Amino acid sequence: MSSPLPSPSVGPASDPASTDLSADPDEGEGPVLQVSWGEAFRTWSRVAALSFGGPAGQIAVMHRILVDEKKWVSEERFLHALNYCMLLPGPEAQQLATYIGWLMHRTPGGLMAGTLFILPGVVCILALSVLYAHFQQTTVVAAVFFGLKPAVLAIVVEAVFRIGKRVLKNGTMVALAVASFIAIFFFGVPFPLLILAAGLIGYVGGRVSPERFVVLKGDGKAQTTAPTSDSVVTARFAGRSLLLRSLLVSAVCLPLWFGPLAVIWLTLGPDSVYFEEGVFFSKSAVVTFGGAYSVLAYIAQQAVEKYGWLRPGEMLDGLGMAETTPGPLIMVVQFVGFLGAYRNPGPFDPLTAGVAGSLVTTWVTFVPCFYWIFLGAPFIERLRGNRLLGAALSAITAAVVGVVLNLAVWFALHTLFGEVRTERFGPLRLLVPDPKTLNAAALAIALLAFLLTFYFKRGMTVTLAASAGVGAIVYLLMGLA
Image 1 (cartoon, rainbow, N blue to C red):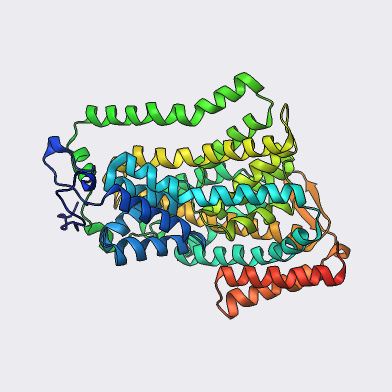
Image 2 (spheres, rainbow, N blue to C red):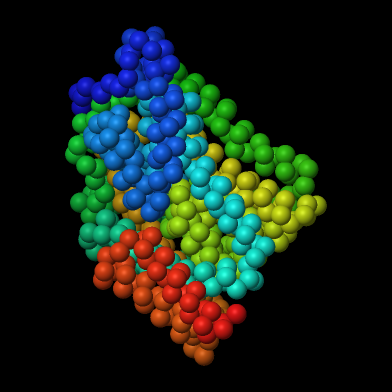
């Protein structure tokens, strides 16, 4: 790595409460930062309360507060942490908070930052899920969500363009995106298999023709960042010590991840909705590369078509909730978990079941995020700038463009048409809407959302608020209830 830059220092070094725990006294490394636990708690709470606007907005908030205002980390170190988190499955903004918390106060700091980042969203989505399940048929709730569903389409399409601009820089990447869309939309190829295939293609392509496959390149500034004291110490470990550290992290995190599932399996059985949700969302947590949009199509189709937890339009309702509440967009899975258990309560009453399902889903979604950070940091630090890894990630991100496009088309069909049937011709699958069931009002609101997003360049909050307001008025005036 490049020679370290000096690290900023904040707070009195003489205050024991402000001493950063990221220093390893055995190695003689000084603390990276000196921030009191109280100040860290208040700052991470503020970051969490302002974490609207999807990953781009959340990362911008963290940059403004941590780099510009507090000056806890330098620009270079912030980019270094961000590039690391973008290598991992899961919500990169939450993992970035966990990483910087770990940088400041080691594992306890990472746990505090990562947990506070998602806590407001967990509370908001749970409250909205309860209201949705109990009052879904009421006119007011139905009217608000009538306008949100078409608006979400514009946001998903905007995500296609945003990711595409980042990676579709040559014909090879475009071909991967097109092949990914065809595979998942017309042939129903599972999302995890697409990710694996794209990664292998990128790895091989990086060896054969790196100029066509290595298109995701880190910011040069990030390469000059000062390593954390933890990563410096880890780099000095012998291979056996690094292995022991990895085993220790796994010995703690894996039982926390799968232990609750074992308890559910023993008490409620493998056929209970709680066990099914735990297993399904555990698998989803491993393949969420490229942001939440990339895996939402997989979750939506499985939740609707395989498990029957949701009706087609309800995934858009949940996405609208996640878009308008603080926290990562992947919090939509909590809504899915709530409704799935609410409608299949087993031995519990529906409300208790819904809360339990949402908490199980949230647990198995975010425990892996902490695991990736605490386990992978030393290894990923060594892989920075690795050409073959960059090629694999470029190919995966290109495939994600096709997956998100599939999500946009799937949502559009189920939002704009009242009836969509599936026609099969051997392995080929076609979703055919009934033109007679076209919802003209939903189409008009979708066009409004597209104009606000792409022509007037309005933010997500303005687009969703305007669409929800117009949709509610149209719904009530036309008597669609």
